[in-house]
Every structure is written in C-alpha cells, then in structure tokens.
Amino acid sequence: MTNTSFTRRASHRFRRPPAAAVDEACTIRFDKARTYAAPADAVLPSFADLVPGVVVGTLTHTTRHSTWFDAEDLRLMDEDVAVRRDVADGRTHWVVVGPAGFAEGDPVRREYVFRDESEHPAHYPAPHLGPHPVPHRAPAAVRRLVHALLGHAQLHAVASGVERRLTVPLLGPGEVHLADIADVHLDVVRDDGREEVFREVDVAVHDLDGVGGRLLARVDRRLSRAGFTPEPAVTDLTRAFGPPAQPSP
Image (cartoon, rainbow, N blue to C red; front, side):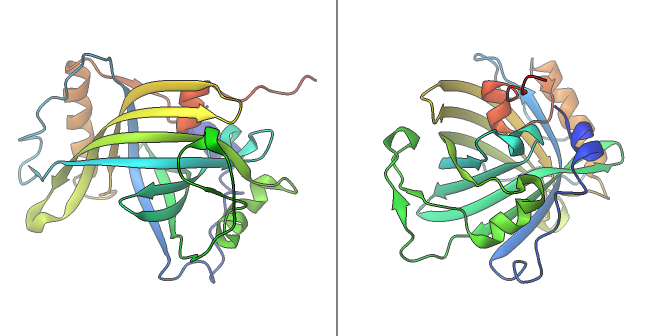
C-alpha cells in the first residue's frame, strides 16, 4: 500500500490532534520522504556537491528501541499509519506517523512526536517485545489522534524492534537543516514471535518549498547509481511482514 492509497482512503480520518494535545509536548513534522531497499553489500555514496550551497553535516549513529501499537486486526498498519513508542539515549517519545498527501508530486509524511512525561507509568511484562517495559496503553493524546481510524478497537503492543541508524544530514546556508539520509538496520519481532531483519535507506527532506525538490532528485540519482532501489512508502511493519491479511468475504 502506498501514500497514494492513504490519501484517497484515509487522510480525512487521520485528523490533527485536538488543540489540548498540540502544546510544548508535541512536535509536528512534515517531510518529503522516500525509502530505498539496501542490498547487504551496498555502500552509501558521497552526498557532497549535490546542490550549490548544500553541505554534508556531522554524521550521527543512534540506536533506538521501539514498540509498535495497533488494533488486533492491524487496521492502522492497513492504512499506512504507525504508532510507536521509542526509547533512545535515555529519552522516551510516542510517535504517530502517516502519509499527508503530496508536494510537487512527491509524497509527504506527517509525523507527530509526543514526549513521554509520565514519571511512573504502569507496565505489563512482555519479554518477547524487547528489554524495555511496555505500557498498558498509549497516552490519551495519541489515542485521540488515531481514534477516527480505530473506532472502538483498542491499541495494544503488536511488535518491537531495535533500529541502528547512521544519519547523514544535509545543511543549507546558515546551517539550515534541509534533509536527512539514514542508513537503517532494523530487527523487528512481532507479538507472535515472528522476526524479520532488514536494511533500508530512508530519505527525509524537510524543505518542502525551496531547494528540497531538486535536492531529493539529486539524492535519488546517486542512490540509484549505487545500487539502491526505491520502495513503496509503507510502514516499517508492512515492510517487514507484508500487509495484514484481509478478512474473507
């Protein structure tokens, strides 16, 4: 399933969070996004001299432990929407991400990031979902954001994963952060014990109106020449396990 199908079927139901949720604890991001399959032996090309005035910033290595939440029938995954709880560098965030239409013909990804500020959250033991305790439920602001897609279904933990990411930032004049290119290695385990390991390159262009379109085209050209191939814009769980099974008619 692609961002196009999301835009046609579900974007009107992936509503903005209520005003009470959009405060200092919530960040909203919009990116032009592309994902590439990465062969095991493929090496990232140089991204120097892509566009005049754009330079490569300091590379960063991060490790993130994530837990994905969905309804029992994986209806969010079916709509290309993901709810994650991320733990990295001692900080915890809740993330809701899904397609948001197009800009200049390129798919745009919308991401809501909520800081987890609970001091003593209630958890249940879930050793198959990784080393970090899993909360009983997502915060109210997260649940409200996806309520139109969930209906009366409840969110619960459906998978966990460890992501190791090398990020190449692209900076414009004045060190304006224009884009990120990330070489991602992800190990995902579903709640039924099925495990998948894969590598991908995620390109996120934050500049939607300026040089971003030209930058994305140049990055695409270099990745393609280096053996990376574009993939449909789907959630990590869909990429790992395929789309959820449809009920029999």
